[in-house]
Image (spheres, rainbow, N blue to C red):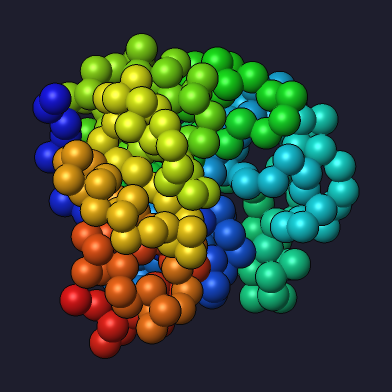
Length: 249
């Protein structure tokens, strides 16, 4: 099956340069670009009013100055959150990024984006796909976009919006176990994204033999990760990709 001509870098900044800036923020993406990384991985989900925003958790406590569920916020309420001060005083006053704002920044910086559709418990995969995927497709050329998810419904809905030649889909796994081939085939996947600590040589080789790109997350120990390059892993998704200096094949 034809796929976009995506040239993956060896290193992708996880939630932006999240070891050095608050995760999933405009600041983290700017930091990644400033450090020389050409791709970022970011999470998208919906606020209660249906606005897609760049955020990972179902709640806001871990990465803001407030508590509660993201699903209970509309955009004005979400804008009042300080999503940088928890990380350091240098980022105090950072605001939650809408998907539209983030896409505009990615375009401005000429970066590639792995956008994870984050379908937290009780949320609608279809609604998230409807809001997020067309916006990403409109903003970025096919060779600079991968849309990924753990959620099969989200991936299937995304595929219905665009053919494999137009939209690269990544299937997320913790461990690549039985049934992985069927999941990938069902959505004409471009890539497999696996927890590198749970990836076996046998699974990695099978993924590569079947022609899929293989990405390992979240890799912050380059020495421990080193043997995966020989297994054919294409890219490491890392909070701190600078640690891999001198450790790339």
